[in-house]
Amino acid sequence: MRLIPKSPPPGPSQEDFWLSPVRGPWLTTILGSVLLVAVVIVGATGFFSHAAYNPDLGQNAIVPRDHDFQLLVFNWPTRPTWLFAANQSLHTIVGIVAVPLLLAKLWSVIPKLFAWPPVASPAKLLERVSLLGLVGGAIFQFGTGIFNAQLYYPWHFNFVVAHYYGAWVFLSALFLHVAIKLPTMRAAIRERGALQPLIDRISATEAEPYEPGGLAPPVPEPATISRRGVFALVGAASAGLFVVTAGQSIGGPLRSLALLAPRGRGATFPVNKTARLARVTPAMVDATWRLQLSSGSGDGAAPLALSRAALLAMEQHSYDLPIACVEGWTTTQRWTGVRLKDLAAHAGATKDMLLHVESLQPHGAFRQTTLSTGQWGDDEALLALKVNGADLPLDHGYPARIIVPAMPGVHCTKWVGRLAFGAPA
Amino acid sequence: MIAAFRRHYGASPLHLLGHLAAFAITYYALSELLLSRYTHAINWVAWFVGGALLHDLVFLPIYVILDTIARLGVVDHPLRRVNAINHLRVPAVMAGTMFLVYFPLILGDGRENYINDAGHGPPDYFARWLLICAVLFGASAAAYAVRLRRSRA
Image (cartoon, rainbow over all chains, first blue to last red; front, side, top):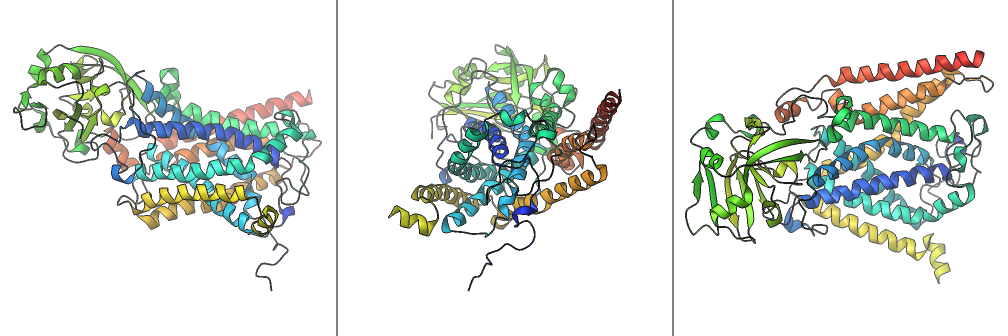
């Protein structure tokens, strides 16, 4: 007795249910190859972003340190100063622009979902399970990333943790998939050429040869779009997304076109977390505010308490530095303040120490952060007191905030209350 | 022996080894993720599996059906000099993918978070998207009109 009938039921499991003449191994190969390039860029910049948070230092890790191999962590550099901004811009722009490609790729292989019999062998069963990781992983990674950039959290898990481990699930399934499909891809390009099928007009567009269990339809309809038309359609959708998105990262004239970007057009540079949300009140930062500055394990001398006037009396430096958010937007402003290395000398800190920064903000994952020696030791690493020549606005971290070249925006701590130089834990 | 393996398994031993390696990485990632105090495990699984099901069984069939309706409605004859269907597809796909990517902003779903985060309300993204739709469909209609004229000349 067979549990599964040999012939498929009526509907999408019948091969002649699928009619599009452009669907076939060549189209899927080219769509998949372009998508692969995009996913490699998004994946690599994603892991670089993870490294940029220095999760091995202090309590920087959001993905808990003792729970994680920290495989791809290295000492994130401070130069070039736009490194983090460029990394996040690539991550978010390429990710968003790749959405039409992902949809087209999934459309091109949809008959495989309904292939009959559903499970022909143990090998096919394993492939189906790994394809759940691939398709589920792709949609999960793109979806959660895009929602996060819009501050939309309709789920019950931590975005950073789920997006990070989701990447492992997705990318392991992806590399397996590419390895398995490589012979099919090479055959498709060998038989039809990499670009040759793009020449055909609509009227000359014919289906790829039918093979049982393949992607090409047995009984194709007349074409309503050419193969180059498919790529033009996907390209137009990607280009449209680029235009309405990229300006929030690239700036210049594109900024005024970033109509749908979360932090696109706008007069002043964006705030991420207002003082009100962080529960920092004007009373906490009035004239009685003092910066607690210490060095060593803490059982030595009492910390120095520096007023804002005392900090302004120290040597001031101004630098044009970008500040960039993981969500993809970035902006370059002129910051003025005291070099962190001058404050280190003032506190008597040695070059091998880490810098632990605490905010007045009472709660939140980013109320504290730990900077590497390279980060606080950079010539342009500042405790900023002013931006563009004026005192910092409260929402931008008055009375003092950290600005370090190429450091993630949320590590540029606002409303700084304490700077503690100390030995690595 | 390899032949016997192939017959029973359905592919080469390399296929099996590759899957076992990928599943090991997946198992590691899932064990870290789902046991973490940051994750509601059932909710995560629902989102992961739900996303794939929603795309494959709801989203894709809906746009394929809409495309079929449009094709039947437009009735492009093979001998017609200028086909209309792609003048509909291009702006619809462009505006549609923009909506798909930015629907939380367009529909105002993250509005409260946005105000808390940015210190001011979001701009009217819905109006902007409508404006983009108008430009895209308008430009496509104009291009179609020009092509029709040229084909008559």
